[in-house]
Length: 246
Image 1 (cartoon, helix red, strand yellow):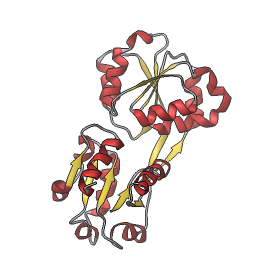
Image 2 (cartoon, one colour):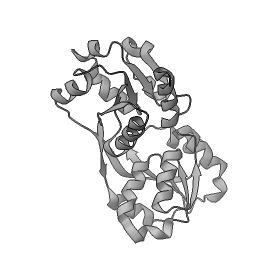
Image 3 (tube, helix red, strand yellow):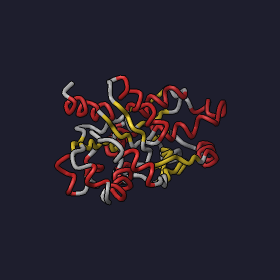
Image 4 (cartoon, helix red, strand yellow):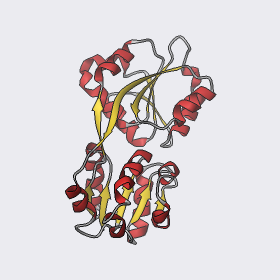
């Protein structure tokens, strides 16, 4: 099947490799690209903190250029939103990793369950991106968890030419489109609801990582949309297997 992958380039390449191994034809359409602010991350790390929290592997990629100056933090507890982010933290050298179920709400719950590791004098440091969903911070606030936020990266939308959109969506039939974030869904359908894309996608299936992503699918495409039961790429690929009949 011809499958459009809307993830940023680095993570999208990993997804494309998985799809190729399954016999599919991945089409990269990275709707956003990251801008890193390593200086902000470094300054935030220098302040007192009892633990770290990350909601994307992108935050770990921000830290990697810090090199050996990152070593003193490897034994700090780090709360990761899901398996992919936890794996990135592990590969970077972090040793005390707590892994949530893939979304901000479950990550906040995990932090609350382990609040004995935290203190008000050394608050949790959230290495965040922008834009981001509010659920993690809202969960911490409702539980009165002390935390600070360092916006160490931002995701900027790519301004693709019509030729790139045409090559991805019109040049050949698209069987499936993978959508990983609410921002990606919004960016995609700002273009895809216009001619000639809307008609070209009439038979295309959409797989969303979460209900939050699905909320941004236009009504015209809702019947063609499936949502992962848990917010992970592995669950999205299970849906893909079912669609492909493999």
